[in-house]
Image (cartoon, rainbow, N blue to C red; front, top):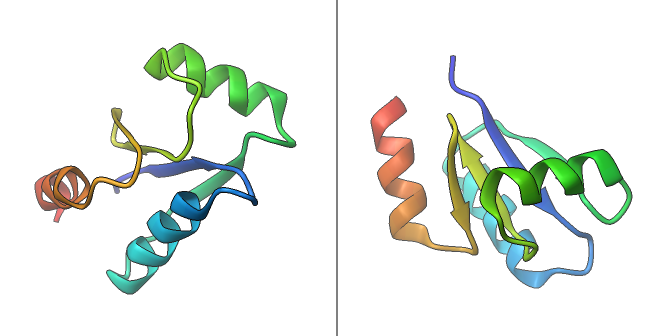
Length: 79
């Protein structure tokens, strides 16, 4: 089973686009709100070296920002 994590904040419009996109594709994911969860925020930065959101972790591959091609490419590897 694949594991997908979306690191986001409630005020980030691109975070909402990513989550809506994944929902439209029927993809289940875990959301981590880095504005409220310092452990998740630290985990996100340690894994990617980046502080910006959204970040999507698809089976260990980190995608920073809302990049449909990269998301679709990684999702294609697990379906």
